[in-house]
Length: 222
Ligand SMILES: *Cc1c(COP(=O)(O)O)cnc(C)c1O
Image 1 (cartoon, rainbow, N blue to C red):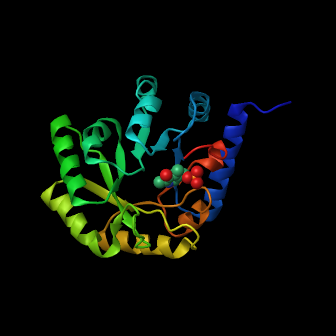
Image 2 (image 1 turned 90 degrees about the horizontal axis):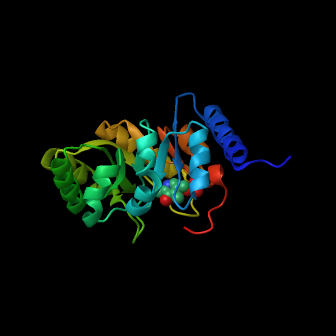
């Protein structure tokens, strides 16, 4: 008997959920990262009961989810990729959570979009924990200024922090740093950990892990 796509994805999801439970005694939300996935994979993961999804690009997210939102009223969509200010309005219109606030200009654009659309999605600040040049995320030493500006000047609903540790480095210290930064600001949500390191992230206090390839198999294109 050959596995159907549903069986494959369902089995992989069960494996991730089990590994998560073993890694943390707190509940951790699995965010299924659906970038680049075809319709069949989206339908299969929906059929498992998964309702929380991460997408990297606004346009692709619209194509994936706009119509499905009519059928499923309990979806939670999270933007996990970099956001350009000219897409702020589309992002606020579609997403429940935006994980990648990393600069004041974007905070201003998001605030304008929130006001215009009468929506106030939850916001996470992405932190460049490795201080890597060219990488998205606010530098660690600029985090508290951005947090103040986003909440006090722009009234954004900032609830947590997100990070993507540098490739080729142990992730643990980055997760520990993000946890400490969130604790210092009194922020509850911690989005950290991907397919290769979600158990480590869960052990360090992640509340949300973002998992793609462990659910869907290796992506052909990024
Ligand atoms: C693609 C992506 C993920 C998922 O990566 P996997 O290694 O496939 O689990 C998580 N977070 C972000 C920001 C991503 O771009």
